[in-house]
Length: 461
Ligand SMILES: [Zn+2]
Picture (tube, rainbow, N blue to C red):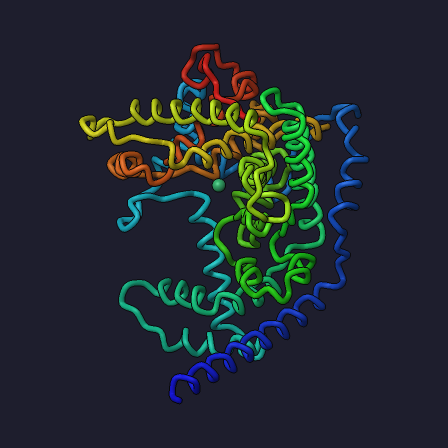
């Protein structure tokens, strides 16, 4: 009897929670109705029509906006120009940041992108939790919990706790308080759509895939749902699927690709520097463009899921074996890079095995290449930034990308990460994809055979 009462109570409270969530959602969706939300197909058609843009006359301009100034300062301060970019681009782009940063003694590292975004998001959450109590009344419980939270470690722990336990409601309030402007949202769609089209062309032209596998991959990609920030179009579509709604929380701290739901989601937290709002598209393609293309690569390499999110092989056996040959190139390349890095624990290098993260590494390489090619065909103005006049737009693209992963990390931490095959340390996430690109070598005039322009390159798309 007690058990059935418990179950009944649980069901009742779940139903009430679901109902509340739906009401919040409805209200917040309606509040965004002043912006027109185009459907996937019309968005893509619009971009397609503008594709001839590169034939227009080239102009040279200095970007003087506040966002450009902030971006230029970040790039300059992060750099160590005494390093040769053809030898170690990570050190060249991030050496200044590494010199000026002290590491956090818990994590033993500091990441430019994560730190600047985390600080901004937590500051904004704090304002929501301690600010005007009449605003967003659905936050009442979260506010009470936050007021009662005390910790001797750091006040941020209470904030992080609130972010976790009241994730959805805080996400809704955050999205309403700090929405993207219509222009930011439109520009983002242009980045996403143009990268999508460029990637599709890269796949269509791939020499190692057979025609049928290419066709099926392209059909699959066309079915992808791409959710950006706090995207009412996708939220409305999945409004009764609470599992998906919870995953589409604007406060999520990283972009994701869910093959089983055929969704790529770039949360609202990502719409901040050094990923977005960088002042100019050269920088935004290098950062946000590459991040989106990374997620898109996952969708293409997961050939065991179809466009409806069902387990279904969409590539032929021949294409799959040609693919794994190329995967092998990446595994060998990263193993070699890691072996060369290890200094302290040389006797353990047998443990190195980059197989576990190879799909992440592939997504880094294909993603960066797709973003670069997209920016090349879109670019019709030679932009310069104050203090960076000597750098070409192509060079600025790579600098903006490196800024995402600028990290100060203790060498023993990097070694531990490598030896445990946990994830690819950031210095390799910057350098290796660039080593795989002829376009990088050309942009920085790196001689063939120099460290950043090796003769053997690994390419999938
Ligand atoms: Zn990934």
